[in-house]
Amino acid sequence: MSTPTPGAPVTAPGTTADGRALPADPRSGPTPPLPEPAPRSAPRSAPWTWLERLPLRTRLVTITVLVLAAGLILAAVVTRTVVSGYLVAQTDQQLTQSAKGVANMTLNSSGDLAQRAPSEYVVILRDADGATSEPTVWPATQDKYGIPDIPDEPVSAVVDRGLEPFTVASVGGTEPGDWRVVALPYGSSGTIQGAVYVGLPLAEVQHTVAYLTRSLLFSALGIVILGGAISFLLVHRSLRPLRQIETTAAEIAAGDLSQRVPERPTSTEVGSLSASLNTMLAQIEQAFSAQEESERRMRRFVSDASHELRTPLATVKGYGELYRLGALDTPDKVDDTMGRIEDSARRMSTLVNDLLVLARLDEGRPMRKDPVDLAAMARDAAQDLHALDPTREVTVTGLAPGSPAPSGLVVTGDADRLRQVLTNLVGNVARHTPAGSPAELAAGRAPDGGAVVEVRDHGPGITPEQSKRVFERFYRADSSRNRESGGSGLGMAIVAAIVGAHQGHVSVSETPGGGMTVRVLLPSADGYDGASSSSA
Image (cartoon, rainbow, N blue to C red; front, side, top):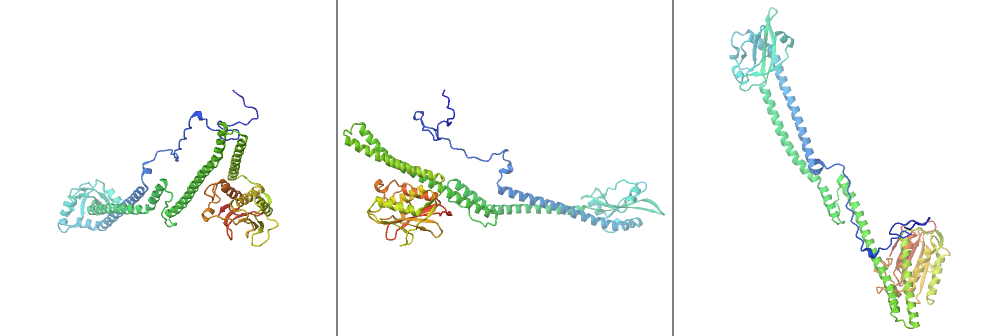
């Protein structure tokens, strides 16, 4: 096993020293595709509870019904307690006010009071020895309510209690119930001989309270059912926007990014959520559109690059096969073939260099920031164009018609790259306009202080449709794709990339009188606050 040399860089398996991936070994077979990552979700530490599984509308309706039922039951209990206490208090008041009179009337009467007038009062006498007399009561009252079950107690307990009413059970009767009783001591000459118990039945009070309780319960049940139905309708209607959001989200998940949530007043929670979702969806759709456009351009870029490289490679391969087959049997044929191979290699080298320039610009590598005189570069480019076509009249002027060219036009940038911009532009003029046609290079300041250089030709120009795509990579206005007239289609793309890297702007327009004008706007030496772009 070999030992790495000390100080040598360590590379990862399957890569070169500079980090590039090595080509796959064809003997190892095709590389299996990587599995698609499964959708990730937030981990849960506990299973879903039954309450969490319920839909929101079901939970809201259930909570509303439970709160309403609890409130009504509490109100019924409080009402029953208050009414029952009030009715018992009225009975106690009546009993305490009339107990002495009823007791004296019973003690002093000589006949049977129970037969004289209807009454609900019951009077029971108990002497000091505990012997109880027959109760004095109207027979109808006794038949219906029975008589109170008086507890065994000494007379002293009656004296201690005073006129405080107390409740006892009932004995007999068809509708027995509790009784409220007041006990009073009786006697003569200061001697207590026994106690008189005066009572009133509570059956009617209890019947009233029971009827009230049933009424409250049935009313509460009806109110709960009605409230549940109304809350279901209101919750169903209130959550309709959320269901629309759910439907829209499902359609978006299915791939339709053009869907939007219906707008609602932003003063509401659902309206604020809808506005936020629509903004997010617009950004997502824009990002996906940009990604699709980038992928489309990348596929076209790769296809065009492959096409551009395939032709010279096929040429080199074809001439190599001719040489291997012995078809080049004379020195003249060999020299001609070598010249054609050299031309194809030169075209490939130019194309690869252009692609490398674009790749570096796309990476956003920082450029030099040196003072550059665009006016001097414009004069040099004019001389280069005149050297390419001595019959062509090339002038350097100012931006305004008839104005002289500025003596200096300084910007901050990369001199080599900016010179490449002008070289590509004058090269296009020489390639795409008739020989001998005039051309101008105009330089000057823009109203915002930026530096402007315009390359104007008087050739056939381009159509508005072509001007929209002139800065695309591998685009040629000449549909025949002839390299002698159309080039590789990267010159204007390099111009746009270099100008954009300098935070500048490049555009094309029609030259007055016919032709095309390319306008390059660059920030001044103090800086130019603008986004880089290219447009027609």
